[in-house]
Length: 102
Image (cartoon, rainbow, N blue to C red):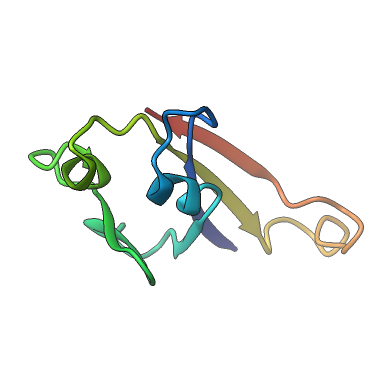
């Protein structure tokens, strides 16, 4: 059984969202659930954008923009290879759990 954690950047989708966050909206990081979750989320163009360490308090975008970032992270857990051969047929959907962090 394989469990993949997908972390998706979500904006408030309004006029107050900065250009950086608009560009990040919907960007997805994928991780193997058996590996340690990273301390920072790093975007290939924008570099570190979210710090998961308690002292950092989340989004790093707010520091660059001089305002508090209102974006959130949505976490999805995709499970594959679980159950019998009948359960793993391609016409069945992979179970997914969403957790939204604000």
